[in-house]
Length: 290
Image (tube, rainbow, N blue to C red):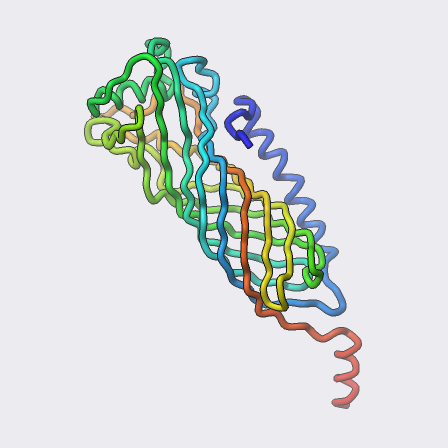
């Protein structure tokens, strides 16, 4: 999955259009859920994800040969805790450690004064500041590490079956824990006088998360699940207020950069489930008390 190939003008609009009907569908399903013999309870587990990550920016995507996107494959892992209301519905909270960012390459000879809104001009300045050779074909990497906290609504098929459909959707808080920039495979600790890479990216941002897949009951208490997991950052990941000597680091005409990841998520959960009494059992108990 190459997330960077999304059409520049429409990637944000399409992501929003895509998520809105899913939210509506999930809400509708939540109204029809519930069974006579409902299985509910707590679960906790571990998660690992192999993902493609991108920093989607229309200024960079239309730059031409001076800046090209390269696929960047990273990993995320963490822990989770959840609660099932019944066989079909539940909520979940994750804490994930996620490596992401964007890779680039380009032709340094194509960079000119009109490139001020494109990262290629920043890479040229950063290379000079850090004493890195920069001519001809170059490569660059923006490496961002986030602590992600998604708060998810879960909807599944009957989770008492051996194999069942599984999905989740919800908001996610991203907290930046580290940022580095490399030019021609060399670390560039300074992006400007007095600024380091972590200074030019926002410390917190908000994403939307969607997952579709299947669950497999390995035993009474152990469940393995596999999902296609997608997240998209609705806010600008770059800190446009970052300044150098009174002037903003990013050019005022530069478009917003949106974090996006997509990949395969594997989860192993231990569930502490208890069966709720059926309506028939409840009536019988009530009569016996009388």
